[in-house]
Amino acid sequence: MTPSLSLDPVSDVRQLLTFPFMVNALQAGTIVAVLAAVVGWYMVLRRQSFAGHTLSVMAFPGATGAALVGLPSAIGYYLACTIAALAMGRTSRLSQYGGSDQTAAIGTIQTVGLAAGFLFLSLNQAVLGGPETLLFGTFLGVTRGQVLALLIVAAVALGALALLARPLTFATVDREVARARGVPVGLLDAGFLLILALAIAATSQITGALLVFALLVAPPASAQLVTSAPLAGLALSVGFAVAIVWLGLGIAYFSIYPVGFYITTFAFGLYVLLRAGRWAWSRRR
Image 1 (cartoon, rainbow, N blue to C red):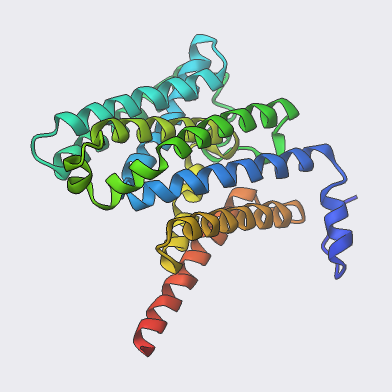
Image 2: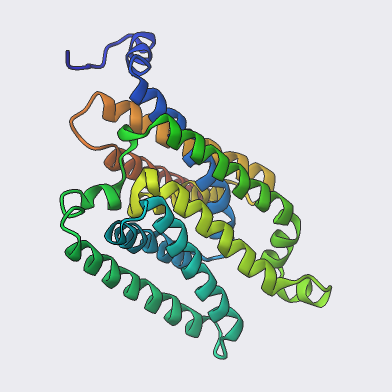
């Protein structure tokens, strides 16, 4: 029987929770939303969206490379993202020309990663049948084991971020003053990149290498349009991300279109609405 929306929301929710694969998808989606929203809030605040996009792209060659040599794709995700984060962190420390030099290096890493990913994909015929899964994920194919593994990784990443939260926020808001007061800014930069890499490697296995970036950027950026207060912004970012994922999964269940389309559309639509509302409010004032 094909699922269909009704005027009874309780009945619709019951339909969503009828099958274990949807329960797993909702649980994994919630974990992904919380992890991406919190880590993404710092990423957007630190203006490292390009670095985040590069790390999400590196999940693609990581998965295809691991499949080529016969390793689990999860190992490839973590190895590729970690190596890219270490490379970007080293580039940041050795940069002699400021942000433009660092941006060029990050762009180079991204280009090489994409080229390697397509090379590995062409060499491994077994992966050619499902490149869409690597790029856009498969929320509806999540297993119970993946949900538990994702929960553990999310707890580790969020725990590490919580330990660094105060000095990281200080170094982000006023980098020079933080350095003058003895805050290890360079170590914080490298540590955050590793946390970001861990979060992306974990969530990319569910969302795909491209969809993860939408959750990392849009909800935090939308929250920062509403408030600049850290705690309120983080809470709002998490709320936006969870609502986007739940709505995307729910509507995709009753639709013929993929969940990634709905999640990215809702995320983009939310940002545009809040951006327009902020502009209208400033004009009114």
